Length: 184
Image 1 (cartoon, rainbow, N blue to C red):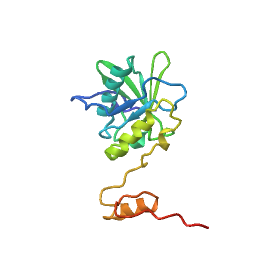
Image 2: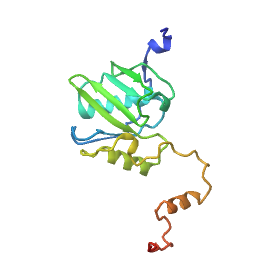
Image 3: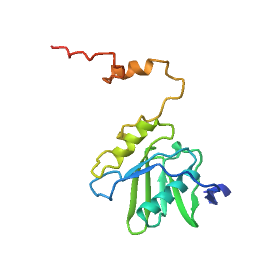
Image 4: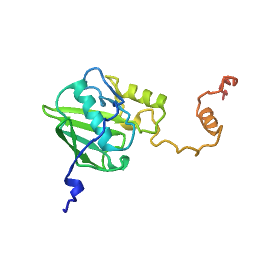
């Protein structure tokens, strides 16, 4: 396999990375499937992973050695990133869910995080991160209350999203009274 120069280089974030939007379970639990949720601000893996590694190191301590991601969810695919003088290897696996990132380190360190798409609305992303960070969650990243891919702006006509919500059982308009279920 011939590797390009870009594949062999270690990418370093040249600007201050944004603060990671991250929510972790209070303590690691063997009963939970996920250890928390992460809501990146962009699809640039160098900036976002530097931010994530910095936050995880500060919150959980220890050294992050490897990060595993799904390539379709990101703009580029570096194999190594430099964070605070350390090198973190990045693996890209098409078999991994786009909504999951796996972080590993020494002494059996493993953190599984649900990844919420950067375009997700604030309320929805917050709810998903809360659900993922419950110490007893048995949900997988793909079953969190987040739409798998947000709709592009302008794809829904005004009022159409309300009709869809109403048809699915939600009530958005306060002037609409709920109807009694039909008896069979």
